[in-house]
Length: 199
Image (cartoon, rainbow, N blue to C red; front, side):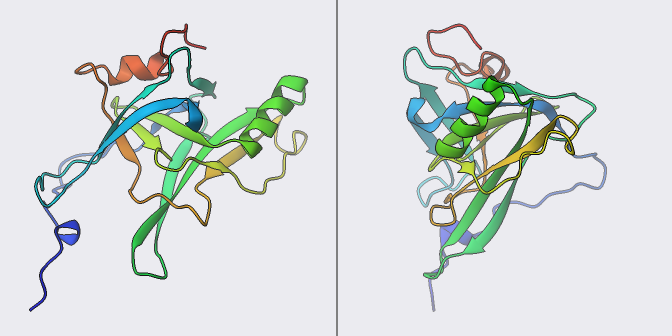
């Protein structure tokens, strides 16, 4: 008889009959250059510690910060989602997708679009209950093909950053845990900055 994998064992059920799930992000995101992350630690179930946890702690290099993108709270341009698939070798993998809004046709917006297209980024969102969710922590996200049309797009375009098809993430997006107990919202509000004023 085969041995059951701890990775594929369901650890608990869920009763959503009497609660309304949190389902909305604040309409803002913090984008972090993947190269600016000094260290990160992922906590997940293992054979030695099967508790159900999917979180990440990280810190930026000294002098580095994330960059905030903010839209109208009545909009829905800022959101994260993921696609599950199975590799040719049978391993589960996840393509992370993080959507933001870029507006304008000035030099600053063109610089942002070029940087998003050429960089590798990690994206943080905050749910309205305060939970901070992290996309792309292992391998980073970048833009796929997009059309930027400010006239037809009402002044800007929703831009999706995704895992590369050849480099999907091994885990679902993770919940952020601060090094300071209960400090997740404060870290998000400070753009995860390390030794610099938040931008």
